[in-house]
Length: 258
Image 1 (cartoon, helix red, strand yellow):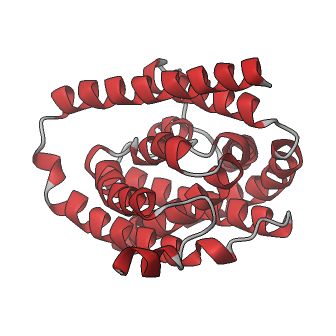
Image 2: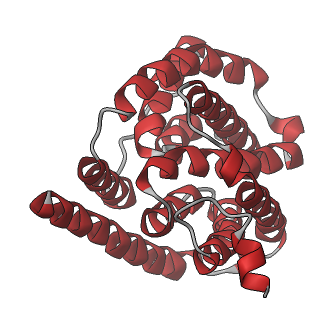
Image 3: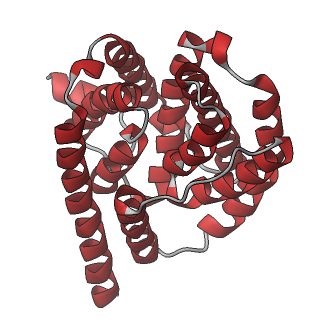
């Protein structure tokens, strides 16, 4: 009785169990992001590669991450570097426009392979050390990473590399990263809406995932910092690697059958 009722509020191609997994995962991945400063968006993206139709992965992921990052920004709003955020927006708008014109041209197997490769790259690559950047540098960063997030979905690690060099103070870094990601996901969501993606059927699921994500943000702030990070990071990277390799495997299989 209950399952058919819930299914009536879900978008086509998504069953009740998949929705339950996504809603639960939103909680844990948001908690992860707050606890270790990075990684939750990538983990959720990798999981969505299994459960969500490929054309909906990036736009739906963007809305959920928007809610999660707005929550983080609200908690740390007094530490946000607002001038840098404004410069980032100047670059993010053309970056989103350029990315939206590319993403629709990629066939499903290619997108899955690119997604898997991207997850492997940002999971294991030692990202370069960058000098602190100026306001024009934030605009360039906004353009590049917003273009990439339109295609791959989760560019938090790249933004974090830049911001960690610009803001050595931990609270200022966390707050500005959250604000930058909120802005980036907002611009991305608007770009997908203008490009014609139908968010309407996804709204009930999105609301549920955002609410559990906000709960995860609160829990991550108060509890998960006690978890031993070195052991957790290794397990986390192994799980992401397995998910990414399977995305690539499914891509190759799709190309073979295509």
